[in-house]
View 1: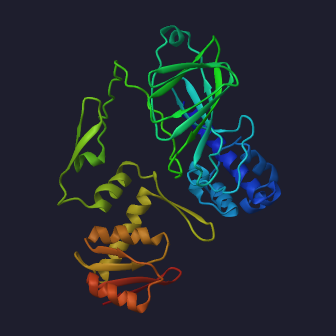
View 2 (view 1 turned 180 degrees about the horizontal axis):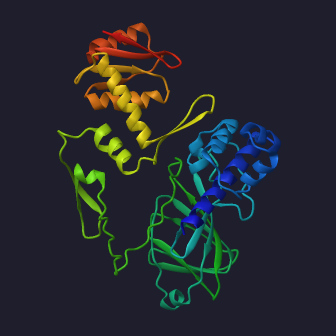
View 3 (view 1 turned 180 degrees about the vertical axis):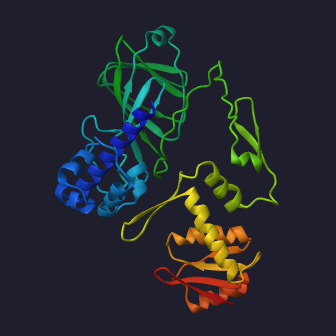
Length: 370
């Protein structure tokens, strides 16, 4: 099951890369050059026939002028002029009530409607019972039947639609539909928001069944259990949390170092610098490097309670320094390197900063005591 989900995720990312490439008017040869792979390797990746590593996705995002998350999650649509969805290429967004939904405009920015292509499976038992599960959501909706027959209920009213028929209704009213006539039904559902604001991703709720799924208890020795008590209801849903041992809690020691002890080779941080160079650090790496920072800071006289301003840009050493200061009990205050002298003076006085750590050049840190 996990392999199937991963394969679908790769295909979705590959489709986004292809669509964005076409929008930018770039050829596969140009993209291959931008991503540092051969043309054949790029074509294979764009078809979703192999796993896409982070470096490749990062280079694609850079070439296509989008964020990495836009490619991975498709959460920030880019198009503002028009978008074309070819037959069979809609983005699958949900599967509920025997229906599979495909969004036909997922890449369009600030859209005021959700055009959906819907496949509804025929169920003989549902047709015999003539009982339709109802749901509701904000806005109005227009459903247009393409193939098969659709029995739709809006409120207490039921109608039968055949190919070519359509219905327009207030979708905040309870509504639902089933395929009838002995075969599956295909229809378009166009959901509109009357406020004119972009419609958030649709969520399709499944009615609660009488037979509840048994709750699977997590009996593993999780680190968080040392510091948080969780109260759950009969369904296993957390309803209340209570923090404990807060006076002893230290993020660097109790979480990072503990994970380094349990899973030393587990990836803790993936850093990509401005030159697109990747650096990978395990939890054991984070423990060792933060220990070095803590010892260095102590040698400078930094002690528990000191307020230390960090100006280390976006270098990976920033995280070592943060954890190191945490270990000796100092208070870290991150700051951007774009601050002026006046900005620094204001922050020194307001926050009571005693030490400032500034990265002046590559691999060189300047210590300033205030």
